[in-house]
Image 1 (cartoon, rainbow, N blue to C red):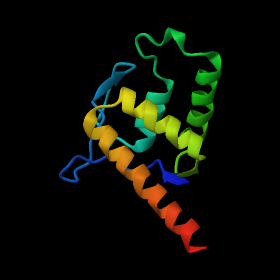
Image 2: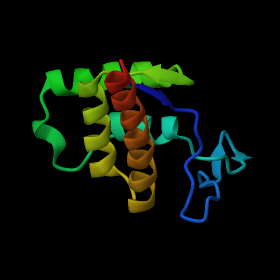
Image 3: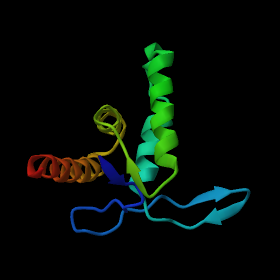
Length: 119
């Protein structure tokens, strides 16, 4: 399945969600648009309270997926990788972000299903 991770995450009114402004080396970094890539990387790589029991294998799988996502653009993902992304974003994200990203994934899965059935 192909997913455009550079797509900007939007609210229910179709307006871009933004990252908060932050200080880096004493300089204010202005708010930037939040992308699927931003959310997925943070979800895959962040530590979650109570997660000490995650196996090294699980953490490595998340790292491998993050490496693909970090390239940006349209990323080719396996069904297993998509499921891992959905699960992790679902655990870590805010409702509006989870809803938007899952909707994008569902649309891509639907397109893939139509391609398979059309053959």
